[in-house]
Length: 189
Image (cartoon, rainbow, N blue to C red; front, side, top):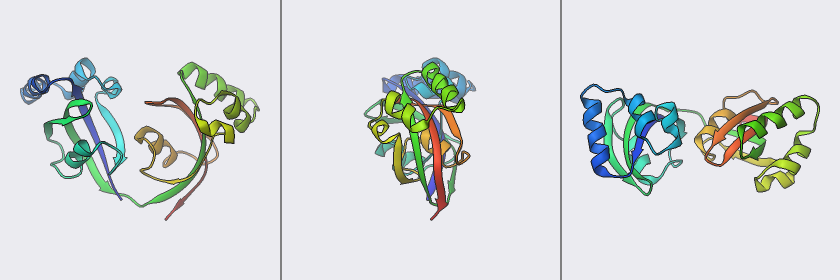
């Protein structure tokens, strides 16, 4: 499976994207401009989207990241979200893995930290998921069943396929909120 790491700046207009690209080509720092200008939450991390596989991003974005030149600022690329400047950081082939995990989804980092402390203090993960998770999986103790790398949002996927099995990990922020994740099984396919 092909995996890429990229960063981007998302703005509302093509003119804004072109202006930012000119500034980057003139020597201004991509990360600084992402923090100042990007409408995407990833802007706070300098536009870094982490690693993701083909199919996890919208089609127009995906096509650029998995076919164009690494290290060059590309775009503007228009998607349903606006106009992107994209820099492909890396691209590599990785082996397919299968994982089983459970999670608790809450709206704030403080709520996630409170639940993590309770679980580490002896409270049952499944009970905490049933009582507090905003995800429908909470009714099943947070169990997400089996899935392969590339099926979940990048931030979640990265933790599940690199984190320690059996340990409560997080809080992990995604566009859905803050997750506590416990990987129950991971195997190579």
